[in-house]
Length: 187
Ligand code: SF4
Image (cartoon, rainbow, N blue to C red):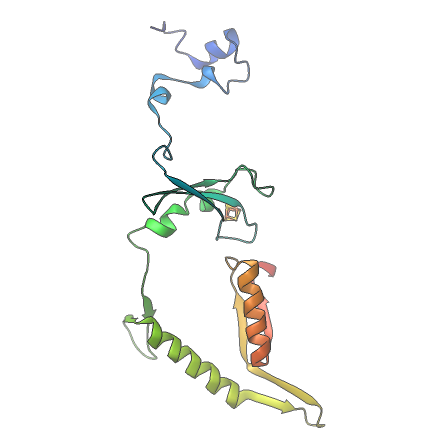
């Protein structure tokens, strides 16, 4: 049983073997009761925080196939185990009850959001892209020089896109003849 003075962390820091106050001096009866949130995890997968272009490393802990905790990856040479508040809360990206898991669509002049099935949404996007490309295609300039482009389609990517996604997007837009391809992370 600690005396009242021994329960004072500064006293233990000054008199014990923990002068920096990072170990036993900073522990209390409350912290002794704490248990790691990952203690029941049966799997851990290396991943990258999807929130911004820094790309901090994450360890994604799972239990029975479900994500139960996401923490900084100490093995990451970029972040060395650290996550900012956004990255630290990315578990809720997966588990939040307010997470949107269906395609949401608000049609022109509509006042309400509707649910669309994914195939319908993709078909609608394809129709719009093809129609826009056809209507805005520029084969040559006024002097007859080849352009072979459309200025009617542009892409502004988000910082949560990873290298591979950006690579595929650039290939797709270049194949479509779109030349305005940018990413928010560069702005
Ligand atoms: S943890 Fe923060 S700084 Fe790191 S990638 Fe995620 S959002 Fe960016």
